[in-house]
Image (tube, rainbow, N blue to C red; front, side, top):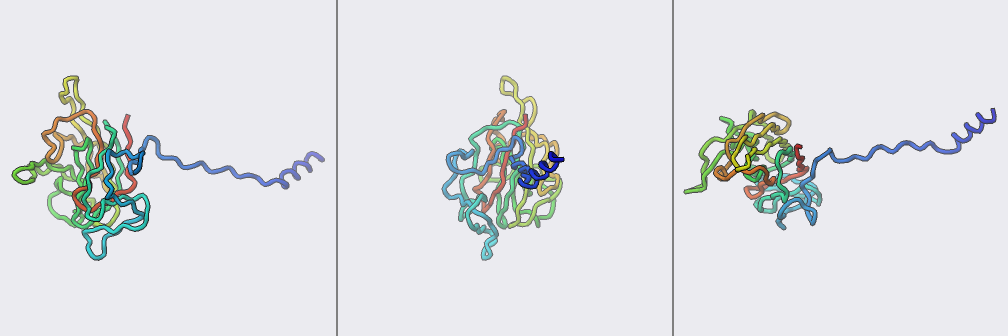
Length: 246
């Protein structure tokens, strides 16, 4: 009986400590790419980048973006034209997650090996045949001379999943690199295994005959950098991450 009373006194005399909730950790294998300073994963970050808390369309000119505060949203300057962001590291097979916001009529892109492009473009209201020049399309091949022009239609997305300019959008892509033999000859093609735009499937198991744009004649390699295109118009990025597929 005395033991029972003592136990009750002990339990009521000392507060019961609740177990601490587990601390949140990044998803396994993901690398956050939007870092500046000495630990940046990019070869070069132009001084014109604005690191904002938020961003909206400029009320006086919807082709421009208006950043506010200080934070983790990257905005490509006042004019919307800065050198592209290219990773220091080369990658083989990867998954990427990119959140972006563009101005009216603006143009950007994500590029694997810096030569295979998924288009970012203001095409929410665009009608007609779905080509590689829609948001989420695999960009057409092109020639630079006598003036820049497409020489094919690229590969259009399955659906036009683009949101209007000024809204945040999410692009997720699984990409596998071409396989080369010891002589550097291609054995299997680069492939967009899966891509979604704003939660809608836009590509599945699409083999790439060549690099895209004016890079289409370039020799393919087994690994290459990841790139965010930022020299074609106002664009903002947030929560950009990459994960290697082993």
